[in-house]
Image (cartoon, rainbow, N blue to C red; front, side):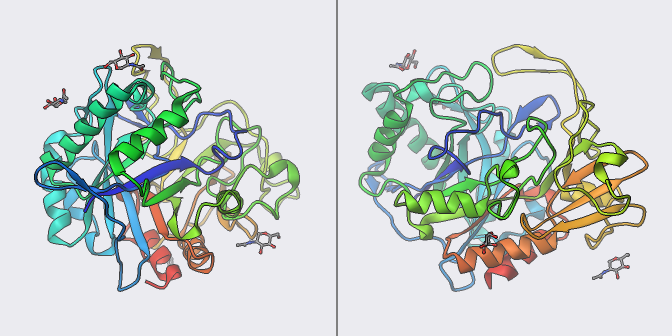
Length: 413
Ligand SMILES: *[C@@H]1O[C@H](CO)[C@@H](O)[C@H](O)[C@H]1NC(C)=O
Ligand SMILES: *[C@@H]1O[C@H](CO)[C@@H](O)[C@H](O)[C@H]1NC(C)=O
Ligand SMILES: *[C@@H]1O[C@H](CO)[C@@H](O)[C@H](O)[C@H]1NC(C)=O
Ligand SMILES: *[C@@H]1O[C@H](CO)[C@@H](O)[C@H](O)[C@H]1NC(C)=O
């Protein structure tokens, strides 16, 4: 049985107002972004033909899913994945190539086989995510004609067979919308994408989608704000940039079943340079949507300001991303080892977005992130709203499963 999932922006395509690049998480010289949306396909049989599967992963005896993306460039971390707490883990990224193929060359392809083997030893589904921020360049042409779609179906099914995968996750950033520079886009993208999925999958096109409910606020927005808000309908109208609640409302209003939506959640946060008067206007309470200066602070120790080259060969000047992984906040002593805030920081928990914020008055750095409390609330929302489960970016950024355990527990797993 082969699962297909699609990663989708929280507010697309129903509310095509986000004209901003989404997350760009830098690793060494490669710039990648978090996946958006996910759907599942039928499994090929040994002969290479396809069969439709409609069953979904189970977890703790329920039908809820608990998933995460594994960033293939993180070395030596496969053995530390908490496999038993995941119904599926997705290896990132197989990037699209100009000849209609995909490539795992930048994501330690040699590790894929052991990744799949480890997953299967734990009865966890092993999937590969195709695309991503840097890997979406050729989706448009790979899906661009009937011949190309058939070739691409065969290519991705070849990947499934080669690695004995249980499913594929498509992360196209984005159909007919600029993502990374040089991505090919076309007004036929959405229709061609559907045709491709139908050919890959026959009738039941997707098992589920994953809503990328993070990078809602970032360096591209006019103020700082929650990276991954649960809710925004309770925020001032100018600050309603999307949220889990708004995205689920839009998708279900369009007829998409809540039971096929996985909520994308983030084990990282964004930091901003915010003056003390903006961050603490009354001298003691942390502001929720402060303006920030253009100087991007360094995030955690993995954040580098090295120059990089885009997938189309353009040199990008250096600069920090300001991203703090959850374990980076702990390793950097912003948080204690149990995930609580260390002394010397201002802290607030926003009851609308249900996310925490930290401010360091010494360095004037303001951080929006997620913690055990916010993950627990998201888990509870997944259960209350009848969603399918969660998908976390990314596996290696948690610390001692503090976030994973909290969201699973919120879901009742
Ligand atoms: C795609 O690339 C893989 C790895 O380089 C190769 O083995 C395979 O034959 C290619 N598929 C096609 C259809 O070219
Ligand atoms: C089909 O794929 C080839 C590359 O493999 C590409 O050059 C061509 O433009 C694609 N066709 C369409 C209509 O996108
Ligand atoms: C979102 O906010 C609205 C408006 O305050 C509130 O009615 C609703 O219960 C909230 N939803 C969740 C899941 O917190
Ligand atoms: C977390 O760690 C801090 C500092 O080490 C400690 O004061 C606090 O009691 C701990 N909290 C929990 C819930 O263990």
